[in-house]
Amino acid sequence: MKKVSKRTIDRALLYIRTLESLIKEKKVLVSSRELGNIMGLTDVQIRKDISNFGRVGTPRVGYQTAELKNKLEDFVLQKRVVRAVLFGAGNLGSAILKYPGFHRDKIQLAAAFDVDPKKIGRKINGVRVFAARDAGRIIKKNRATIGILAVPKEHAQPAADQLVAAGLRGIVNFTPSSITVPKRVLVRNIDLTIEFLALFCGLRA
Amino acid sequence: MKKVSKRTIDRALLYIRTLESLIKEKKVLVSSRELGNIMGLTDVQIRKDISNFGRVGTPRVGYQTAELKNKLEDFVLQKRVVRAVLFGAGNLGSAILKYPGFHRDKIQLAAAFDVDPKKIGRKINGVRVFAARDAGRIIKKNRATIGILAVPKEHAQPAADQLVAAGLRGIVNFTPSSITVPKRVLVRNIDLTIEFLALFCGLRA
DNA sequence: TAGATTGTTAATCGATTAACAATC
DNA sequence: TAGATTGTTAATCGATTAACAATC
Image (cartoon, rainbow over all chains, first blue to last red; front, side):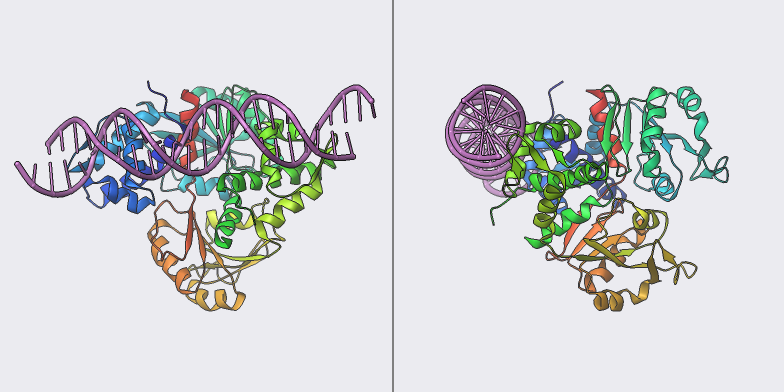
């Protein structure tokens, strides 16, 4: 397969998001220009990006929203389903479990983990909360590949260690402390507050 | 002032984060190589970035962590303090209010808003929750400039409208629905789940 | 057919990397 | 001084934009 740059993939994920809402609005067709206006990109950029994923548009007509979305998702997920688990079912963890933007059909949240006995056994948005000490067993049973870290930052490293030991291949780290993991494990750090600074920088200009 | 690229600024924000933890570990000096190892960047990239913010390192010695952090923060925030308000004090909003990574001295969370009478009047991590209908008045009184959207996605647009009407200049949108605002208002969209897909894309490769 | 829109190839632009000079 | 590390200038690389061809 042709190599697609990370930047393009990131944009593709945003295209999927936008297409979802267009589909919900019952919009069947969209042109690169319209898409560009919505997303603040040029039409050329969009056509260029999309061309990475195959011929999917019709000259004079545009792109079929549903078809384009499928094409992009197929590329990104390669028709596979990803199973993920969540570590830490506090406010942030609950917010993630309830987040409406989830591609539920593509990313399955198999289980959540917490140390708080009051939470263990409950379900949050259909996902059961298990005791953190059982994480290894349950991760293996579900063959999950991605872990989401939403624990207090003191617990970030031990929790990450546990996830790595269970054989997960990727971790999305929502805590503001950096974690160290073996090279084979991919980490994405998400800092909820860094965007405020970034926004402010933009305002200044 | 010399123009600094957005990419560089984004990295600068991460440098600040990393420096904070180094400072907490009582590390006084750090070399570009060390910093690079921690952050997964080359030493050259780091020196190049830092050179945008003035001469701050000492050859043969490295950078003073505290000095470098201040230099970067001064550049990013220009010694000003930003006042922000939060719209929506549910799980996600509470998680943001409690997020430990906040630069509390630089970004002041002036107020939170919600429609739920049970929440109004309470304090979350020291920030008082007000009735959403009072937002305009309170925003003006506090002279806040940034709004954080953490409401259910159906309310994203009306809430954004209210924030814009109150005169805010920037919005950090945590809902997965896109909002339309006047051009003078800057928006940063944060999709909590998009990183999972991005991570998965990385795994595949 | 004419016109609009997609898709591609070439040109430009910007960011990263490499090489090296400056400095403690 | 010698050696290590910063900071800068030049070269490379990649991504965006422009121009245009293809197509419905």
